[in-house]
Amino acid sequence: MGAAWLLRGLWDQLGIDAALIRVARAAGVPDPQRVAGCIWAMVANPHLEQTARIQEDRDHQAVATGPYRYVRHPMYS
Image (tube, rainbow, N blue to C red; front, side):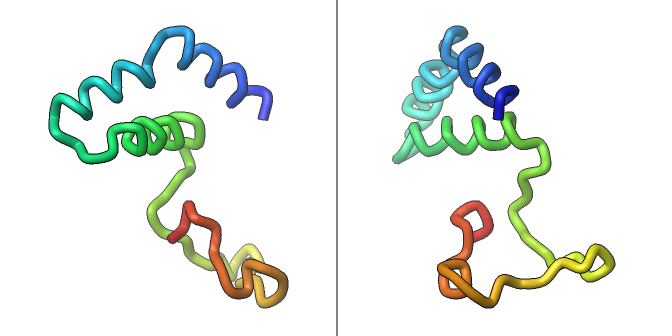
């Protein structure tokens, strides 16, 4: 988490969010803050994918108990 925290500080100091929001707003994007948030997520987590898969070769299993039994993490929905 430390690296993401440092990157977020630099991101804010450079005004990247504000610039992305201005560009998205000028392009007519209905929710420019969401666009900036998605771009931040992709920068902070280079392994972010639009799909999730169970890697059986690594003994991954779908969660069958607790809250994720009913609701998946928003990143994967």
